[in-house]
Length: 417
Ligand code: ADP
Ligand code: ASP
Ligand code: MG
Image 1: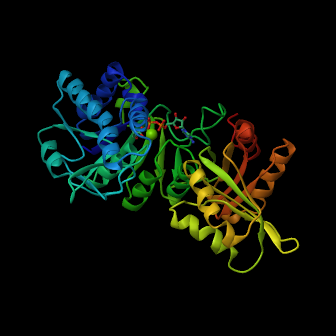
Image 2 (image 1 turned 60 degrees about the vertical axis):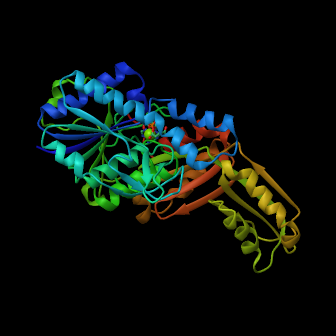
């Protein structure tokens, strides 16, 4: 007997028929003798609809009320799945974040989980009851208010619950059968990986691969939760899922568990960054601080930064910010124009950041050069570059997203035969 967390994303619970399909997956594990806690997302599209309603009501709205509204999607699916399970003769009970509770800080809209109280559901495991937990939501205990964890947050709920109840495994069921070398919807030749190291998955997720929320990978790494990404679109009663063999999927694990590792593991891309360029900035000590301190004070995250070699005492500075903060960044810089003394600010939102990721880069030279060469052969201009020990990112025109991702995917030998 094992203790399992099974998480199902939006497309897996998109309608009542799919919720029944999910219930059959759960039934299979219960009948195999396991203790099961399920974490569900809202039906696909539901959270977007709720977010849009908030904006429609008032562009600038109270974040506490936003949370009260957007958390409702998961309330519906958790209840429906509990009913579907009961209908199949499985004892089940739904749980909202506040009922366990799953306690969080008060960063409404992007709250962090502080603790998961699994006492009651563990007690009920003894009687064979399945817990169906609403993902994405928690509660700030001191204020008693509902919180949500940021988009894609049900993954994080699942891993946190797994850590909280000391589960043997956290299965993330989604609409693809694992983590691929890049988004399989963009590159049909992408390959599924059997295993990927925590650090690489962390980079993939934070650089745009939305298959797992970044925070869920961090939690899995810290709490050593065995996290396995797999498909909910398989036949729940397929004989191979009932035997001991490993189902298709990707295990997120320690680097040491991976026997053969490639120099490059995967390619990720993110369309949600915008470019800001400040032209003809006087090149003197303290200028970077004068540009970036106002942005930090406005709580704007700056990502890639490029500064040109100065000519005649002036230089250009280019950097990226989240697209949602683009207008605010320009306003913050306009406010300090007289202090900095730059000529103009330019910007672009039709850009994409493409990243090449791999632990093997630590010990191999020339990885970046190959990317630059391949992109130049395709006539793709690079606007900015940033690197770290295990990744290289380039900012290019969004129109070239697919071409660039496919080119890099094949250059590093990631294409399936
Ligand atoms: P869920 O609703 O189950 O949480 P998401 O839509 O959040 O599902 O995440 C799954 C999607 O992530 C896939 O449909 C796929 O298009 C996308 N994706 C992006 N990069 C990758 C990758 N490297 N491997 C697998 N899927 C990826
Ligand atoms: N329903 C939430 C969202 O769409 C959480 C999730 O799906 O993980 O962001
Ligand atoms: Mg998701």
